[in-house]
Length: 215
Image (cartoon, rainbow, N blue to C red; front, side, top):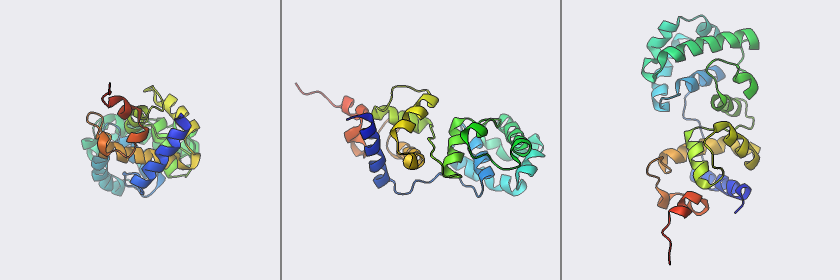
């Protein structure tokens, strides 16, 4: 099976398995999703969702964050880990949003990665979820599962993004990545994948190679 055909089949199978392809981070506006995604680095979405209600109640908009004391923000986000770096990034990214983008979260990957602490993964999430543009969010689940499927043989996120953009229908790419997260958590674990119950097993190179050979 060619990779293009395999990717389309994976999209179809995951759509059936996970009809709802939603981001697990909770937010009400673009800035909140941007900040929540920054906090989610090296932290679980569940933990971030526990922290952000109080944070967003204290700081209600981009100007509040830009003018905030980083040490005060640290107290709200301490349990997310790397709180000093994340606090500084949040303040600096908001200052840049005000100075360079008229207070509005940018709508392109190229502009978003100009913000402190924002990489392509976060930028693609914002572009896809907020602005409904084609996006490929390459997180650990995406890297692992698409490699196991045999769609690539690299761990370089930017290379994987380029490969998947060529293979996936643009209008389905963002939801496909959300479904990979759901599938990675539920079935395709990094250490103990539950291959026998996997909806992708019939198109998966990893599963095919793990089967005993018959003489």
